[in-house]
Length: 270
Image 1: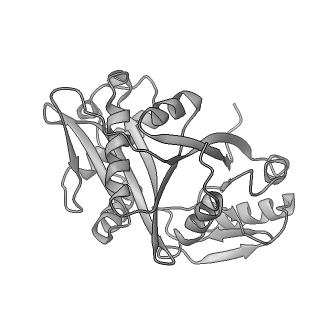
Image 2 (image 1 turned 30 degrees about the vertical axis):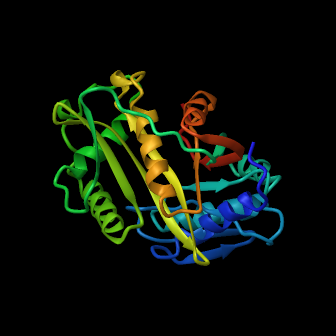
C-alpha cells in the first residue's frame, strides 16, 4: 500500500474542486451538494472540517438533489469520514464500498491483436456509440457483444449527456479513449484531470468492455493507456474499482490499494 503522506487529503481536494466549473456547491449540514446540469451530475460529499455527517444532513441533501432533478447520490472516503455510512443507511440509501487505488508504477500493456486504441476528439461523430458501450457494459452484464445491434438512445436526456461530454473533452476536463476492433467500439474509458493549487490530479473513470468480449485484456489495456496518458502531466492518478476482482486487474497495471470509496444512492425496492 502507498505510504506517501497526504494522498487521501489530495483525493478529497480533488473531489471538492471537480464540480466547481459545472455546478455551484450548496452546504447542507456537514455535506457539500453540487447543484448543476442533470446531464453531468455530481454526488454530495462530506465537507472537510465540517464534522460528522448526520442522518438529517443526508436527508436534506437528497431532498435538494431531487428538487433539482438530480439523482440522489452520496460519495465519501470512509477513512476520512467515519460514521457517514450509518447516516446514509438511516436515511434510506443503499451503501456500497469499493476499493480505492492510486497509480504507483504504471505498466504499459498491449491490447489484443487487431484492436486499436484512439483518443476521442470532441467532434467525433461516433461519440454517442462510445457512450453506448459504457451504458451497455454497466447496465447489462449479459448484454450484446456489439452495440451496433442496439439502437442508440436519441432521447433529449441522452443528447444532453453527449453534449456535456463533448464540452468536457473540448475543454480538456475529460480525456476519453476507445478501443476499436473491425471498425467497431469494444471498450472505453476516461480520465478526468483537475488542477489543484498548481498540481494536476486525475481520476480514471468509466472503464468498460462489452460483456461478451471480456476476458481478453481490453479493460486492463485501456486502464494502462489511461494511466500512462494521465501521468504524463498529473502528479497523482487514482480510481475506484467496482469490486475486489476488478481491483486486482488494476493492480496488474501498476495501481496499488490505498483505502476505500463509499457510494450511496436510492435504489428501487424489488
